Image 1 (cartoon, rainbow, N blue to C red):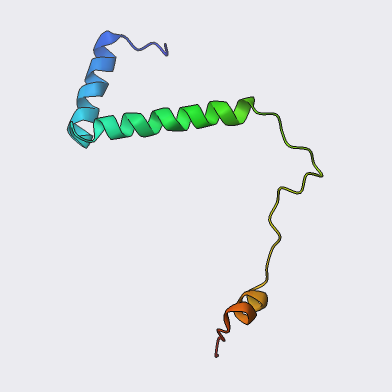
Image 2: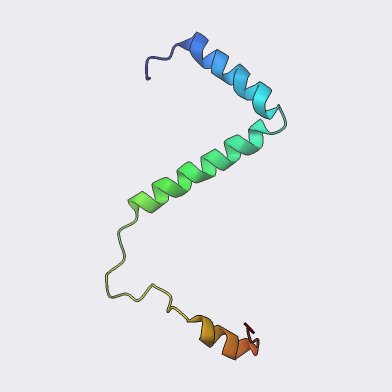
Length: 74
């Protein structure tokens, strides 16, 4: 495990506790767990077919302003 022993891990945990506080640690751990879970899900899914059309069409800035009626004056 990267050559870290119990003492080193304990020191790192104490430093993290001082930096973030006791109330913030569960939120950080939850976010980290969600990120790892999402990463595992994304890497285990097969890639979509190349012709599936999952990309969004790009719109130009003039097309967006013509729909909203907003005009940029220079």
